[in-house]
Length: 103
Image (cartoon, rainbow, N blue to C red; front, side):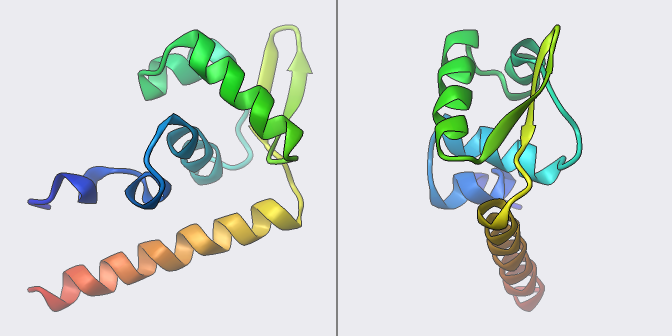
């Protein structure tokens, strides 16, 4: 892994930015829910950016509130997120195949 981009999350390799990091994390850890503070610590992103991003993602039905005290967020279960998870898996598989060929 000499290329720094190989250490990035799958979506972040293709779509740079905090939104990609948040979506990639919630997709990778599907089934878990997180407070904004937890995501801030895990992803090293400011509170305001995480909260704004989650609200934007909620408008597109990609994330949902799972608990209200404390407010927690998780990946929505729908066709959009299923396709997103499949896309991430396919990109990860291609990355692995590409890495295997270089050995």
